[in-house]
Structures are given as C-alpha cells and as structure tokens.
Image (cartoon, rainbow, N blue to C red; front, side, top):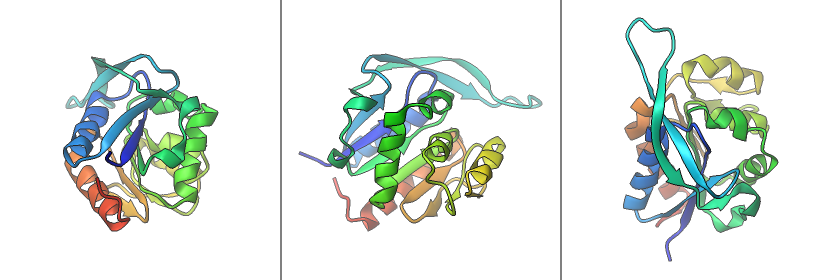
Length: 188
C-alpha cells in the first residue's frame, strides 16, 4: 500500500485547487483521500479572473465525494496534507477537527501544502506564527495578523510548508511540494 495524503476541503472549494493536487499526487504514486466536515458529495466551484474586475468570479464546478469526515481522521495515518482554496477554508477553519489535523502536521514537522484561501485554516489553527506563507494576495493581511510573513509567490517553501496564491500556480506549487515530500523522505 502506498503512503496516504489527505486533502482538507469542503463545499465551495476551487475545483482546480482540489483536482490538480489530487491527480498529480496520485500520478506520483500516493493514495489521496478527500477529507471534509462530513463524508458526503461536495460541490466545488470555479473561480476565474476577469480583466477590469476587482476580484474573481465564481460559478458552480464539479461535485466529488469526500472519503472521510474530519472527525474520523487519524492524522498519524497520513504522511502529508493539502489545503486547497476557494471559499471552503472560510468555514472549515471553524471545524475543531480540521484544526486538530493541521496542528498535528505542524507539530510533527510533516509536509503541508496550502493555496489561495487555504492559509485561512492554517491561521485559525494557530500555526502561521513566524512562518512565511503565500496565499491569495488579498489575504496577506490574514497571514500577517496570524503572525506570519506574507510572500507573493507561486511555490513558497518554508520548512514543511509549501504555499501558493491560486490555481494559476498549481504547477509550481505541486512541483515544490513534491520536492518537500522527497526531502522529508516521504515517497509513494
């Protein structure tokens, strides 16, 4: 059996920020699970950027089944976590089990990938203090209020944490994350 990686997400997650790491990590040989507040079908969204528009637009995206509820996750059974963006992190950051899982990975210094609004969960879990993190640029203030240092980049690495701005960074984000997995001797 291959090593397992958990994606922490929920409804209104950005489709590309869930599916790209899901399939890229499977391609690399990992067993990837989707964790959510409940084990049920999730509704993802598609965010796009329109010239002259101050923020992104949102449309319904794909649906996908969660494999496991956060409450049922034993983080010791996973070698890494991924926290996609979209709007899901705005509400899963209030889930005590989601924060418990995140804290486990930071306390154990095990690989964590977060993108877009994903660092909102990291901030709520209290793990960004003194850490450098990228995020959707409008969340720079959230990273800084959580005691972190914001870096506007696509594959920002700070120890076990690999972060990015949004889905246009998926390639550089996952490339850096796979390098962190390899450096941590976490192979599929």
